[in-house]
Amino acid sequence: MQDSSIDRTHSFSSSRRRFLRAGTAAAFCLGLPSLGWLSGCASLPESSALPWSELARSMQGPLLMPGSPEFAARARPWALQYASTLPQGIAQCAGEADVQACLRWAQANRVPLVARSGGHSYAGYSTTTGLMIDVSSMNRVDVDGATGIATLGGGARNKHVYAACRPYDRAVTHGRCRDVGVAGLVLGGGIGFNMRAHGLTCDGLTATRIVLADGRALNCSATENADLFWAIRGAGGGNFGIHTSFTFQTFPVGMFTVFEMSWTDRIAEVFAALQTMALAAPDALGMKLSVKAEAGAPGLKLSILGQLAGPQAELLALLAPVLSVHRPDKSVVEERPYWDAQEFLSEDGTPEYSHERSRFARGALSGEAIDTILANLRAWPGTTVAATWKFFLMGGRIDAVSPADTAFVHRGASMITSAELEWTPADSPDVLAKNQQWLSRFHDRMEAYTSAYCYQNFIDPSQRDYLHAYYGENLPRLQAVKRKYDPGDLFRYPQSIPV
Ligand SMILES: Cc1cc2nc3c(=O)[nH]c(=O)nc-3n(C[C@H](O)[C@H](O)[C@H](O)COP(=O)(O)OP(=O)(O)OC[C@H]3O[C@@H](n4cnc5c(N)ncnc54)[C@H](O)[C@@H]3O)c2cc1C
Image (cartoon, rainbow, N blue to C red; front, side, top):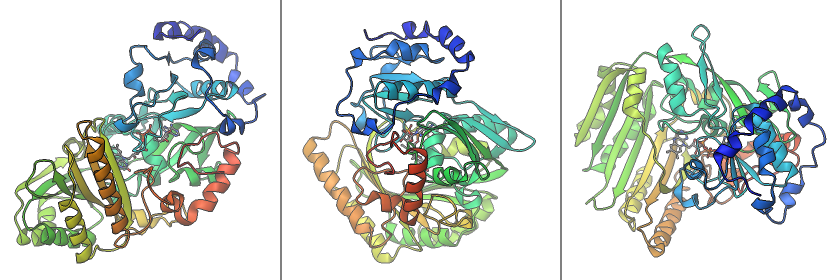
């Protein structure tokens, strides 16, 4: 019979603790069936026929079943178009041993599995119709004030990093969205406003712990399992195993200037001037530029948002040539201590319907490219929400690492560009189809001005030749690591690295 309540699963926890103390982790590695079968599994086992209570007993954290109070909220991904894919059970792991118990149970019972951390996969790749191994409760972050080393649980989110680093005036390269999981962020590279001064999120990673399909928990660093450590810095989540901790070297942070400005007139000229400024700016500048077509708005709006590790006067000097082209309609420029600055820059990122398609650019976008971007946005068919094209300025310390030194191959890019479409269920299937065609044409057209390379963290289910787009010449080495550490291809999803 299927367990249906969280209370009942809780009642199994104490026996699980006794079980663990008896040292089951070592036994886990023994007697597992071959791992290749999951891929050949023709159909999903009936949930009611599965021994869920056995799984619940073997875990310290709770097992949520459909109907239990938290199930719907825990199952929901950020990308709402994938929200109808529901797991049969959600294992809320309390620690590494729970992750191992889940992997053993799922393989023994031939249940597909997926890891869930922050749930922000653009393609819903942390959803499943099998077992969701939810590590989001493993979110503790400890910072050693003396060494600046931060140790994170495998389910920590940006907001947990903010809270733990703030008292020490230290940081890593993090994202703006408080609820994005560090697991997904760092495994795909990780971009943020600090990246030009300090490198990508993955460049600050010094070690991680990962549970493999065969149940082993490995330490990975430059000196331990170095081939896997190379691969996980850029492969993207969900490819080799389930990470239970991440160790970062943080850096000190001081006073910053944050800024947000927008223009609705003379957009092409302002865009060109901003790009010229940004590409010549010191690494202390982190900036995003976006051009938005919004439902109901009469024209396009160009905005910039970012930070400078420096005083306000320095930022205004950088922006002077842009401001001489045209004054912004809105402008906020403030000096703040770093973590107050992040209050200004960060956002909650509530679940939504959206599709984002990225391309890395090298060097400056030509005048023709800018005209193409604006023309496409002006031709947006329209939804009830918006369409946006944006770039995130790259360069600086990101390029201190060579494309072959980590799996993140996109070193040397000047910017990540992306076109994003947002909609709601109020938009009819016809409207949505027209908009998706528009997005595809726009994305295809931009290849001529940017590159065929796309950001693996803006994972895109409609990207052609995605393996080349995400990994370039690092793909063969990634596949070799995959064959070594996950030979049975247990960790797979539509765009995972094939064995
Ligand atoms: C609103 C929003 C803002 C964003 N901002 C940024 C940004 O500033 N910078 C940036 O670089 N990217 C950004 N992204 C992209 C983001 O980095 C990716 O979507 C990332 O994969 C999300 O990670 P997650 O843990 O939240 O997602 P999840 O959906 O939980 O996981 C993503 C993938 O990783 C796997 N996974 C999850 N946890 C683990 C684990 N512990 N071990 C192994 N695999 C795991 C999942 O199975 C899935 O395949 C943003 C995305 C959104 C939606």
